[in-house]
Amino acid sequence: MYAPICTIDFQHEPIKPCKAVCERAKSGCEPVMKRYNHSWPDSLDCSELPLYDRGVCISPEAIVKAEGPDPYNTDLTRCNPESSPDSPMDSNSFHCRGPNAGCKCKTVKMSLKTYLRNNYNYVIRARVREVRNRGLEPTAVVEVKEVLKSSLVNIPKETQTLYYSSSCLCPPLVLGEEYVIMGYEDEERSSTLHMEQRPDRFNFTKSSDIGAVEICRNLTG
Image (tube, rainbow, N blue to C red; front, side, top):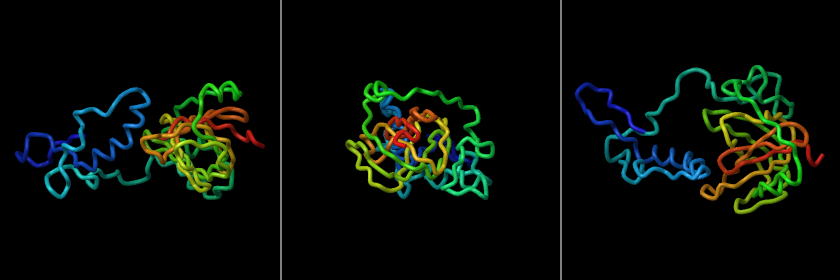
């Protein structure tokens, strides 16, 4: 959150981040921290940080990306020139592994007992359109076909972004395939859905920032 100034003898104390940088980090990290019974630290109180137009601080624009291909971008439609969103492709295919290569996905058998024990907030049937892995927050873009159950978060029948519960793309999703996805909602960010995934035909899977999502491939088929 803090960085030294890059000018000799200008300032010895670290330059604080701008308030916008802190708020962006908090919105992304706090929901995950709360799931593990941790709160946002008082030492990182965003209200105490300076605004970009009123003081010296590290702005969001100062955080630049390295040039060249993004190693965390697993846009599967770019991995194979002949592929399309309607063509099934393993999200862990040889050409698209990236940072997920070392992950080992667990398989959990689908059962009514598992469903009832986990008390999911939502259940949807959706088609996978895209899978992305950017650092520690991989996501899956899906087209919602049917809302079987919902709670606090309104889930329209349109494209939605689901978040994985870890940095691994587990289980590997196939583009163009339909899944029954069960998971949890993020009450703090009442617009995000989390997914916990486990592959194969009658098995569950997990997603991102709105809650743990479990996917049961072709369960309704």
